[in-house]
Amino acid sequence: METPKTTRTCGWCGRQESDPARTLTWTTAVERGRARVYCETCSREHLRAMEGKLDSEHW
Image (cartoon, rainbow, N blue to C red; front, side, top):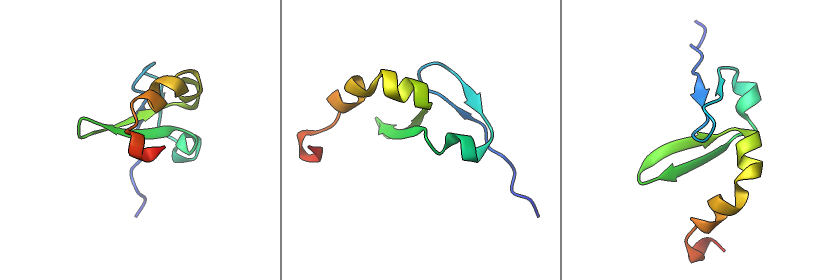
């Protein structure tokens, strides 16, 4: 039986992708207990904002 494809949506720009191979470069995060994903383009553009949210123990 084939596994159903799950569409991922970027939390910043709304880009959608259903091919799991294309989402390998996407960034995942947990914000306020909720899983979020960000496309490669947004991940690169907003890297500083993502790093700024990390607790100091991760540095």
